Image: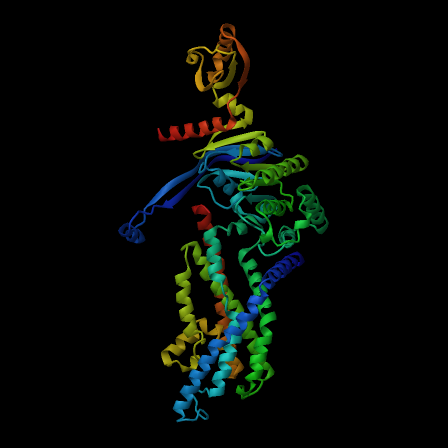
Length: 277
Length: 330
């Protein structure tokens, strides 16, 4: 056990060093990511204002006031900083196509575990650079968080939802990448996934705005945990008894994708080694 | 003790046949045609501990496929194999800690980091004792004289330097069996020589069992006492390098330098003419009659110099390959 932990630590440390080679690239990228939000905020400002007949105050859309809306977008940024996995699925598919995957058949190391540690390192490197711009933006926008800091329990649930969001995003995208064992190119599949994810994760708009049948669908899908859920928890939109149930569903989805990725890896390797590597 | 045992090992790939043209491509979306490729067709081979064996063969002969089978990357279609008592394609961690595969064109080091860091990682995944790790790394860096390169990002190294680093990565866990697939491909003459020297010395000291594929006859001549010629997925020859000549070449190359104007008018009486630049002539003479023909030449004509040689190994092997190709087509 100790030996294994040490191995994990070494992989993590080396992957972290590798990522830090690109830290300059990160710093710029982080700030740029806030740009699309600004256009969205202006858009909502116009909508709130036109509904309110010239004044955006006191207008509510699906229980969101204008400040709520701004706070929501900023919080989904945090959620996505945990759950989004740039290059993971396409990277796995590329490794399968190029035969780099052989490394994991020859060396005594588990691919999914290795990818996970690299991804944690990737994220840590990102946070080390991104925390500052994030803090700055949140500080400047503190006025929009009308309710102030949530209570400790809610805050704990928020942090849990972020970490679970990371796990869900990781195993979901790994599973998509492993489909590369059957289709050499997964980019169109990935595109469809991104499209659905964009609308149904809450990245585009708060999911409370969806009409009835869709609402239920979104509640059952894993996508909302990638962006909407952490933000909703932070803003107190999820009631106490709902919270445990929702977290339960999230954990169930994570388990599902863990098993799916294991299964795909096993079947994929069998296919790969049968067909010729 | 046999380290490697292959019995009637075969591997057949199913390859998708893509037809030319748009219509055919569209049809291919629904109804695919496959073709079977017999990459390895019943290979029997045993290798004892400490042997250094070369696999020779034309491209597509099944050399790399065999190495892939032995390192567990692919499963065979039929037949059995045991390496160090393990079935390779079960991919047990215990087996994976005891062998290494080096592919000349594949990179296992982290591109943006110094090789040192990749070695630390290998230390962990192969569970190498720290003291032993330091000692082995020390030895290998000295042998390959790359100490000052350890801290340089791998992407900044030359191809030859990178190959040396790859070799170190593969040898850190002191594998008992080593598979080398074209380790000198793309290297310049000096780098090839260095890698060769290193492998020779390493093998001499460690008695590691090594299987090597290479297109460079010099690699083979310098390193391997035993040569296995594979063509069309089958073993065509298994023995010493010199033995290839005895077995496959029925000729000697005789070069004669005649005294001024003493060249016989019809050299074809003595053998096949390869080259004539008076007063010199190069003949190919059947091995069985070399002595007789030479005696007759020397007694009838005035000869200043004579040499009798085996044909170049490359030519003989090329001949073996093309013969194998013809017999397959027939």
